[in-house]
Image (cartoon, rainbow, N blue to C red; front, side, top):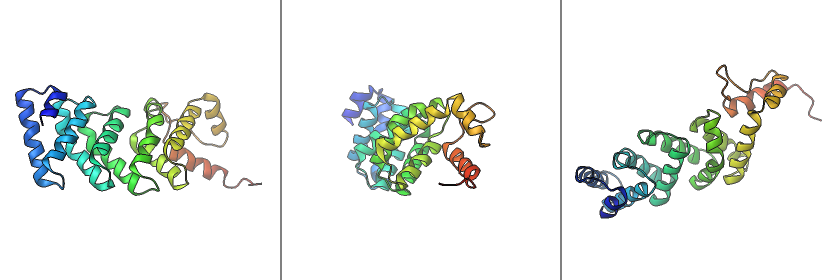
Length: 205
């Protein structure tokens, strides 16, 4: 906990709250208070403030346990995903739920998922995509043997192409809308499904 205080510059009151939370989680989870403190330190090094650490630590522990990932690494991945999609710390449980579900329900590890999200997250955010939509697309690619940074770079190219008016016009020829009424790119999975339906009657060879 001294390391937590050092990296967060917590006030006396904040440090007391963090210490009590570490003890509580050490009593009520499969992790020791010392392990919880290490996760808090990792979040502090990632720039999380004391109140944000309090909001995030429980969810990070759940991610580590559910994906059989070492706690420091799970903490790093969760923090990066939260920041990558520009979400507030009080949404950490949402982020870790998405990461857990995607890693456990597709042919990839949490590490694969993290590597895939790194190149695509900033482009997806700019396109108005949620982490749920991006994770779903990454899961589809993983189940087809495309994982990690290869999946992330492929999705990044797809989002860039869909932002092109020329590409959008090509899709419209098939009756497929790339953007919604607000001008945001529709979920990639929805576009793919619409395109598949629109072209299912075309000859394959």
